[in-house]
Length: 415
Ligand SMILES: Cc1cc2nc3c(=O)[nH]c(=O)nc-3n(C[C@H](O)[C@H](O)[C@H](O)COP(=O)(O)OP(=O)(O)OC[C@H]3O[C@@H](n4cnc5c(N)ncnc54)[C@H](O)[C@@H]3O)c2cc1C
Figure 1: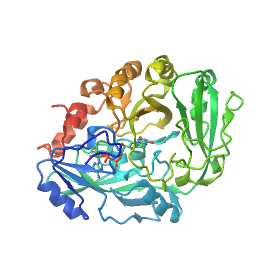
Figure 2 (figure 1 turned 45 degrees about the vertical axis):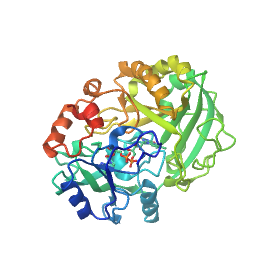
Figure 3 (figure 1 turned 90 degrees about the vertical axis):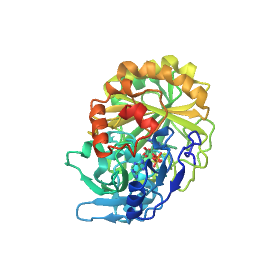
Figure 4 (figure 1 turned 45 degrees about the horizontal axis):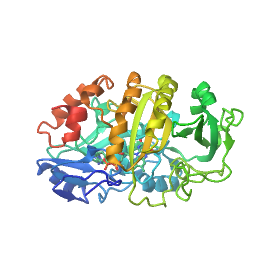
């Protein structure tokens, strides 16, 4: 029992795959320790337990779209890929997606997973209601507007097992994806806000060495009238063939580029849904800072870039709009996210993380809950104004600590 990347071994004595909500309720009520498991795409020990792991993969919850409100009810274990196909068939869309569509909807929401776009908040911002099995086995519905909602959406599995979510949808839309290479850092930093806001979704790929941003990926809505900032005038050149974000890697797995229009679900993720990622030979980390600090944060990372080179595949810089979930890494502040894809060398990764965390400390960087960091609760309390309130709420809904694990104690809840 290990995660997708193979860097985390779950300690659970048992893995259950309930098919019904009643079965989830029975498992939770009869287990001393229990933890929900999504599609296992986290790199941290966030989903670990020494009790029973409850996979939501086989949960039989039909996807139901309310045509009048545009709200879709979806089972917790559904992947974004499966949900997106169904929504597209009905003329609807999610406003954003993560880079990989194979991730479970509830797992993504629980860790504050995001895509890119200065106007696009984390995926959890689309949630309008959460159906959750509590520690005593009771099924509760927490709706947007309820007092506990801001604590319940991004809650890293600490409040119960989510069985279904209600999500806002929007009318379907088409996107064109283009890639540019060699944008000089001087120009990127001078025009940073305009660069990240030049289209619906923008990602910068870099290794923090050299004078240029390696790749700029732009996903523009066809109905938006095209990107606003001309990156070619700033020195970037358009890619002549489809590119993978990793150097010297075939582009078969990435979504279509080269300005060919296509539906949102085939352009917003970086990776194709039909591409089955096998054992991921990688580890990921990510830190979010308030957008106004991004240029200074980039300079701090460029200063240590050469010391990361031996273990870093690539880093991705994305914009994330503010939301109001207590534990959202982009909660309460317009953010820029610094993502790192590392070689799967745990010791080497753990050795370089403190230098990144020190470089980003002046900007109160918040780590992605599903990725690897060495920051613990005492450091995070000052960066999450509602962390103590969340811990108190978790104790109130789970007094016996059924959903606790060592990772939660260390990072979120305290002893
Ligand atoms: C290749 C790759 C690309 C990625 N791209 C992005 C990206 O673009 N943006 C980004 O922000 N992140 C990204 N991630 C990280 C990923 O989105 C998160 O780690 C996410 O939480 C994984 O979801 P999961 O279903 O695999 O959850 P798991 O790893 O299985 O679990 C994560 C947490 O969610 C909880 N959880 C899961 N299901 C439930 C449930 N039903 N009820 C209650 N709690 C639950 C678990 O208990 C655990 O605490 C990527 C990861 C990979 C491997």
